[in-house]
Length: 134
Image 1 (cartoon, rainbow, N blue to C red):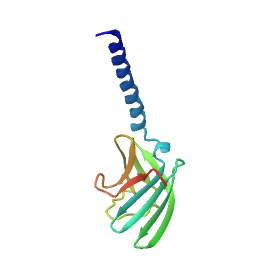
Image 2 (image 1 turned 30 degrees about the vertical axis):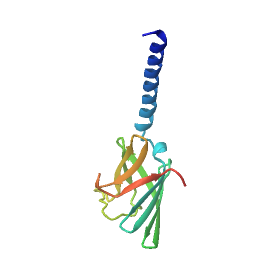
Image 3 (image 1 turned 180 degrees about the horizontal axis):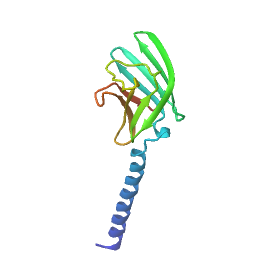
Image 4 (image 1 turned 90 degrees about the vertical axis):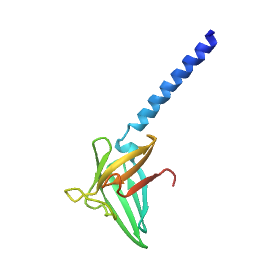
């Protein structure tokens, strides 16, 4: 092998390492700022839009057969990817509440990049997909 081939091989390996660390930095980040955004659930004839703010507040709008309910409250992240919501959270069909009567669930990231929120019972509870464009 000549030096040109070895240099290209070394550069390729370095690029793979750098890309891995960038991906890992994003994939392992579950802080409030990285989870903020608009999440949407559609199922059982309902559409629920959930806006999570980095200041730990949420705004929820639930459309049940044309009847719209709205709520606002607090959200709290615990562990690496778990979340609980204050009692103002509007309950969805198939959702289980914790012992304190609060909605709770877990964030998951497809490919480590695209967050979704699954409410209890995880993994079969109501699933919210994050909207990236408005």
